Length: 340
Ligand SMILES: O=P(O)(O)OC[C@H]1O[C@](O)(COP(=O)(O)O)[C@@H](O)[C@@H]1O
Ligand SMILES: [Mg+2]
Ligand SMILES: [Mg+2]
Image 1 (tube, helix red, strand yellow):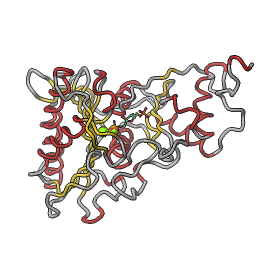
Image 2 (cartoon, rainbow, N blue to C red; image 1 turned 90 degrees about the vertical axis):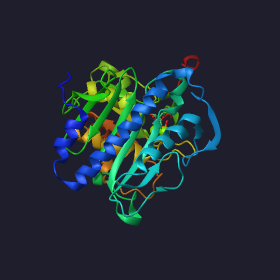
Image 3 (cartoon, rainbow, N blue to C red; image 1 turned 120 degrees about the horizontal axis):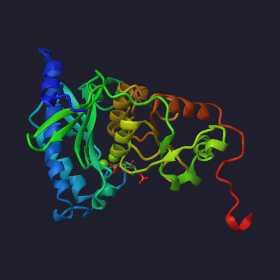
Image 4 (cartoon, rainbow, N blue to C red; image 1 turned 180 degrees about the vertical axis):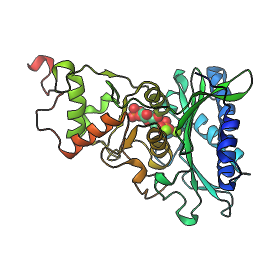
């Protein structure tokens, strides 16, 4: 329910007279300004000429860049260039964008998450984490150091999910006033769940622990979990995690046996870390299967990590599958319909 707290009022009261917090608040405000511009573009759908268009380029992760990936990167960088931000590390730039190393903060961002969904009119978003500027090690610091993190979802509503380390809060864009108004204060992810999110088409590539966990979910009330599970997969991390914040669940992107996927698909600094901070601050958890995401020391800006996040008890249960993968037979039987 809206409680009439605007984002501006929330940030002003959190920052008070503290100079560093004031800088962090300024950066969040600029990220949201970028979000409003991006929401307008995304909201035009196929009326926007570049919607869904490919470029000839690839990003640091080897993904083909879409025109909107590049455009959203430029929109955010342009807004941050005269701000307390020294450097930006972005999914869409191989090298860090350097403004001025004397400034106190750095921003890690995925300017457009879920870009494979652009032309399908499904929710997409912008992820960001704000870190102290530690000079040369700017992005090679654990997510636990984040001063603020969150994401903006461009869906039926434009929503900001934010933590500054004082709980996780959701603000929605009131298009009439242009303000972001808080709709979910101090979100609490239910600790238990009967819903998981995974791209099941990768099942044959998973390790034993993931096979066993998902298999046990699929076995439902007749299996070891003794309850029926539901599955949802939007394919935009921001949308899947928004659902988890609202009604619980776990999001899974494990490492798998495909070439280049040993650590999954998601990038630690600008995808997993903001999500992990938001989840932990909402009473949930986020791991790479075993270790808390926020404790991992990234080796470089674009490094990948498996991600398991959401309802705390379920994330902990998955860690047990990794500690002792069950020996019972794999749940997706090798037998096919015609081989029975
Ligand atoms: O296409 P897959 O393998 O199901 O992966 C989907 C995941 O990849 C992502 O699209 C990665 O983010 P980008 O779109 O920013 O590259 C996530 O949003 C999503 O959850
Ligand atoms: Mg992404
Ligand atoms: Mg992206």
